[in-house]
Length: 83
Length: 272
Image (cartoon, rainbow over all chains, first blue to last red; front, top):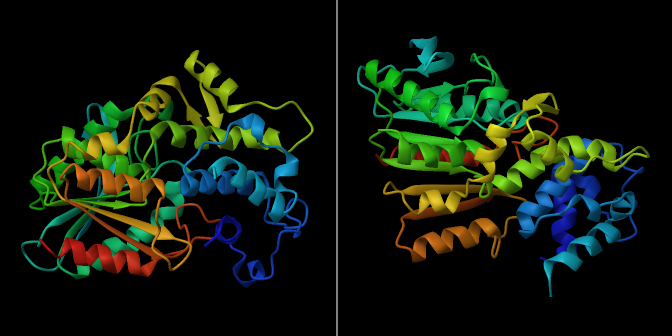
């Protein structure tokens, strides 16, 4: 399973999207488009990313842009996971 | 079958315990559930209750309690810390023993798993085994994730951001800061920061059964948990690891359950 799939599954889990997650792709907008994605959900997602991928996310690395799309969030994770 | 609800004394604080006894005169064993922290505790409650009822059906006594400063127990969270919480587990274990149900298994959920590992080392209990549900591996990271609940509200907005670092500084400086409604003080933060699960488990003699709930049906590889299990096995420790698909019941907005986890845990408990 690649990083994008794993991130998608995290979103599905955190936001309890069910089948809505199926059609998500890199261009799918997140922040502002998914009602369940509030600040609490952001915290849940960041925690899940940390626990799944094994790295810590410092505050100053997060911004609204991180959660703009599934692609931006995946890119954020890929940049930190290492090659 | 008698279910006892009681407030017991734990070094001066009233700790709430719920002890469920099976119908048979002598229980097959007693499973002590060690709860998760803050909002996770509320979200895990259904899973713990369902597991508890299923274990009792199978002939085991079960004990559920609230750490001081949480749930129905007395005391303030801002005054609580791991030493005090170890006293609480000790008091609960002695209470179970006094009623003919000495604790034979601890099932810890999330931070409760980490605390159960600590209790297995510090409290006198004749444990057959330790069951861990989605344990917290690193107390410092868990503390940061908890503090992020407060930091995140400012993260997405236009106003001034308060960072996890700033929150830490304030708390370590003596301020009690409410994080998602939970008054958080330096003592607890210090205890969390100093706790690494693998360091506790490597000292344990009792067999450990480590359960994880995953988002796919593939067995996880390379995750921090899997690596920790591998390290412990290399050290000669008896660690069973089982991962299965399900929702992250300790954190989902809607309360969810993961039935396979309860069934699998009962199979472990029934090993004796």
